[in-house]
Image (cartoon, rainbow, N blue to C red; front, top):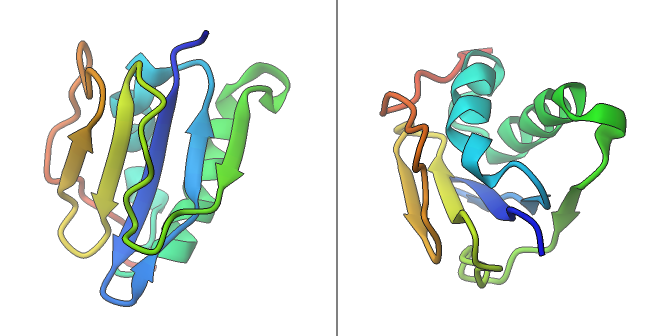
Length: 116
């Protein structure tokens, strides 16, 4: 039950933990677009941390937000619903699988990530 999504950030060194949203899968596009300017380009760890902060600020009580360990290949199994989003912090491109993806709110891609 829920409207689940997993978001993973990757760079040339590896990948971040998976950000888990229990509710808000259809909002992933808006969340990524809103956070993009504050996500550090080229650094998956910083991008992930800043995305979590952005999500927490927008969820009442910060509920239904978590982090999961990501498998070695950087591609967690989908929980269904919106599925999995892999954000390449070097290019701003986003791969989706295992769900309905960005429907109904796709962001403009590539994401324009911050440089700080």
